[in-house]
Length: 185
Picture 1: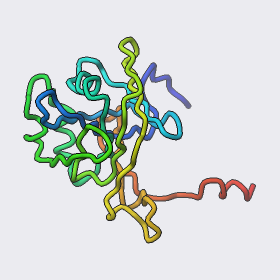
Picture 2: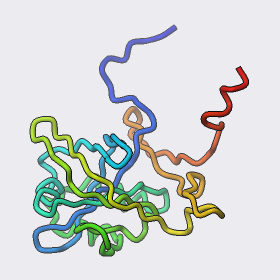
Picture 3: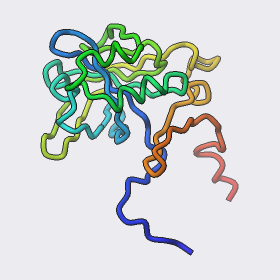
Picture 4: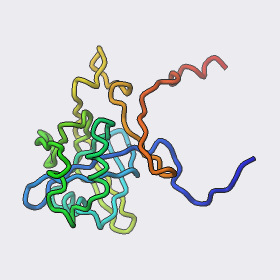
């Protein structure tokens, strides 16, 4: 038997994304977002409330990075998600994470997070709060690459957010082969 749950954001997996920007003084800033995805072959779409410090930072520099959260740093990442850059100016420093300069955009990479999309702002819609970014480069630590130099989801083990139970989960086990398993039917 099925039960109606009402209007909820229960679509899985919801990525735990860490958006990196620079503040007006040049210090690094980061926030956590769960409502984001690829929206084209070279574009990301993320819903980011205008009240976040991140939005004016992106508008000013026209750039940001998007990293996938990993289990090893989940406490620091959760801190970035529950702490406002509008209230705690040095929240990135307090997280204990390390910012490194991107070679491609005017936004920081986070050294501890092994996968990052370096993006140029395409647009931000004040009404819908939809941020679109052009992916100009993807950078990955060699620790998350396979023997052929391709990204390994198992090695990356990205963290997903559960909006129903307010938990973080690791995605790391392959269960099938896309564009192949269905051919047996």
